[in-house]
Image 1 (cartoon, helix red, strand yellow):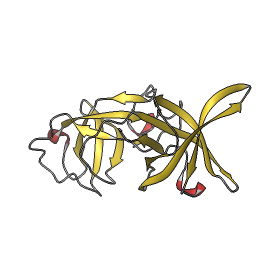
Image 2: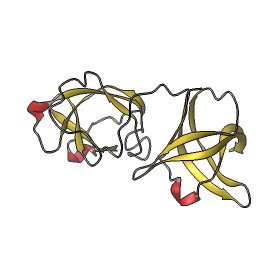
Image 3: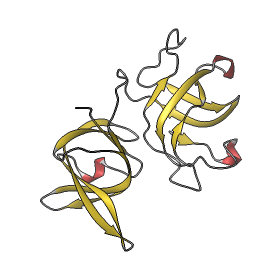
Length: 182
């Protein structure tokens, strides 16, 4: 998802991130083709965050959606008739509950161990060493092992994750990790 800047017709006040239920239409259509869509984890808008990142979405009523919304489809996200963001669909899958979500704000290589990430975490990880889905702006892949760690940043402890089986350049700020339900 990429938020439009206010000068490009986007929101005057940036979205804080998190759950979001706007409307959308395929870029090949018009604002008359609006459908309700729900996002579980949108990135914070420009001025609050990076203004873009990977998202997980579902149609509130996917029955009869009039366009092929498969990989490569570009959606215009609207609030009423006004476009506020754009999304390109990278992959589709049946909706599944995810026990945890982690939006990456920074990643760093740890020689001999893997890739460390810090960011915003929601949910609960019941044990380390399990795989997770990694969705970035241009790819969707499986991280073979995710380990829970802690990092001290600016004199406070934050949850950090150690990712094994991926490279640092695959884990950019704005990427989202999602755990699989047991």
